[in-house]
Image 1 (cartoon, rainbow, N blue to C red):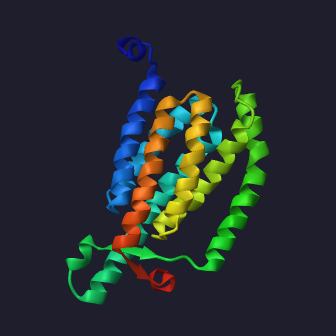
Image 2 (spheres, one colour):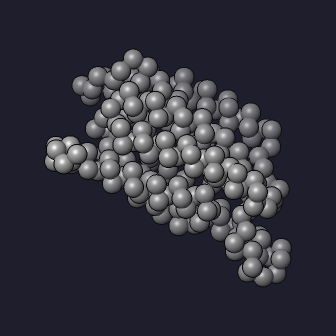
Length: 219
């Protein structure tokens, strides 16, 4: 074990640090704490360097999206906090989960966007990864691209407090575990394994404790 850690380079240590920040983030996400957005930004900045170093350019670009969405999420969640306070006239609702159910139209549009963006970006990232001198394994670029696109949609759903964001994360995390294992990013694979478990926990927690609002109320 000591030999393993002594052999780590800068990016190896950065990967481990990003894993621990990511774990803290997902715990706060399950608890639906606004502080999760700050940790998401920190985690994204660290992951950009790790992913670029290991030829996961789509995942690296995804981190930029995470940063932007985190700012949006802070604003949206504040709206939900204000909405519940005004509905019960007190601050007692601070501990209540405020969730929204997406319409069928939102789900269908999200699916169409996922397919279109994956088809559009796959050849782009394939060229970028090979031009950088990296040697991705067969299917790595397609998996990288599709998981990055689905993660963008899932993150937007989180920012909108859609309960169904957890179903997307379950799919994304399960596939990502295998993707990172094959790519040699074992710490990231372990992190996404933890994400997978917490996605199930988060889904259960939100379904049991959530108070639903109509989507139109928070636009």
